[in-house]
Image (cartoon, rainbow, N blue to C red):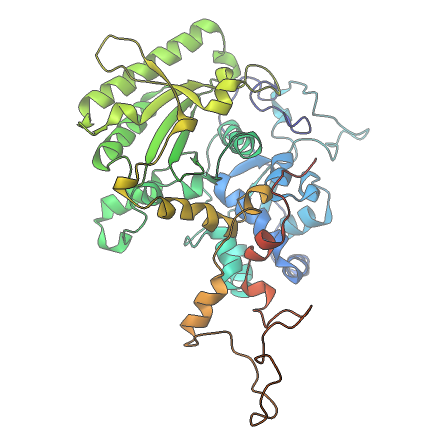
Length: 457
């Protein structure tokens, strides 16, 4: 496992708490310091795009997770020039004490002689709820750079949840990206019901209640297998009343949309807090979760060719990750349990990694397109971006301008015939005319990256 990151499940950093913790007051906005920070970030905007894109997708993460998602080690150090600029620009918040407030010492938590957090401490980071991005940064980003942060969504994902929940989801996404056989991994911002079930639907033409539901209901993350099937993951820390409502929503949507279009299933991954981790509590949580899922599947059975019970499952964090910094074969195979066919019978084990696409229900190539498109997003780990062929968004800008190809200056002597090549075409070691790098966004990095292996820490 990634030993340079804390294990947010097994490492005793939460002190049995999973509810929101207090954050220190961020630095004030406005003034020359903020202006200078934004100018510094926009000189080379791709690091900014990746840093904000990762936080937009997952809300909250530790600084080592932030560095792993983006491939930028500087983000693990809250005192680095890049992190300092992001804070002074009013774009992110860094918690200098949130994890340590539990009072439980972690092997990854150290303090300097003056009592301040050491630069290698696993601090928390999230987007700052301010207008700095919309008012000061967006007007100076190119369209592909803006897409790299937001994925084309109108606003940043600033909603708050339990820090432990968000950090567990981010860690799970990283482990899928690092060790599992997946095409790509999408964060919560890109796991909404709208994108999972009705990606081509115009929300403005939906009823208000339906549009809100499609935009706000979301999984914690989504795995896209190499063939295109989507496996949504719900990290489940408790089974309170809201859990039943969540299961009901999933069962209703899974019944409404046939499985192979667009091939979505969901797994509830049970990850109880430290206080609920003894065997009796885990058995109780599992029993309640299974009862809720069975009841929902009974209400929303689906059709004979599209049974809801075949697309909803339960797994345990400890089955996939039995000890600190360890993973099992169950994780690599995405082993989970599906509801029984007959009431009262046993739950059925399944290996979700073997989910396949039935080509009779759609073109598999269309389902795989999201893997290439994710190469344009800052939330996508660099080694998953490397083997993709993302579309060149500059082509869209060129078409919108009314051109059929990239314009270039007219020849100085138009009546003189060209000598062997068309003006603007490649010649020897000289490339053909290309769009500026900033008009290609993260597609530049996807095309330049190497073998697709995760960077060494």
